[in-house]
Length: 178
Ligand SMILES: [Zn+2]
Image (cartoon, rainbow, N blue to C red; front, side):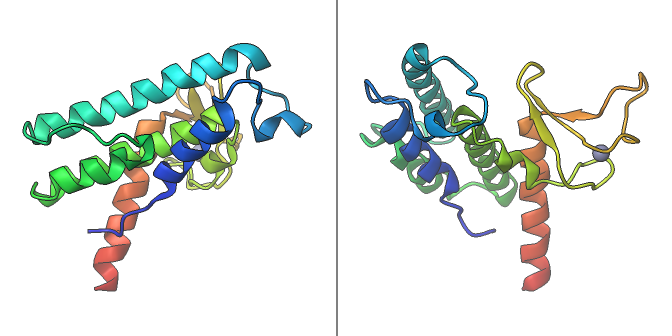
């Protein structure tokens, strides 16, 4: 089993501390990059977003462990709770859990306006580095002009697919190392 990455929990904590408190716009406000949302509604939107993320994790946990008990009070503890209550599952299902957690980490990064997190993944089709986030599509696009689909459009990938690829890659390198 690959080591447990805390990035997703850290990002969720950051979202909570920097983005949903009244009167604050988060670290992206001072940057020159284009903000993804206007300032006022972002806080409520992020709050709803965080609730939906935590609810999703809770659902996955309860599906595997109906007796898991109440979820933790601290939002970012949800991932450890999920891992703790699914540690008995077969390795394949635990990998799926890591895909869910990693995918949420990418979603959190995008919510914060940090789409650099996407660029750290090679394109699953051509292996070029430098995928970029297309907010309108809700997908990552390949920068390689030659990497197109049947209609000549840039290849695009969902975060779920990138997460699956990432976790599979990590798992196979962990296996090689042992
Ligand atoms: Zn590509």
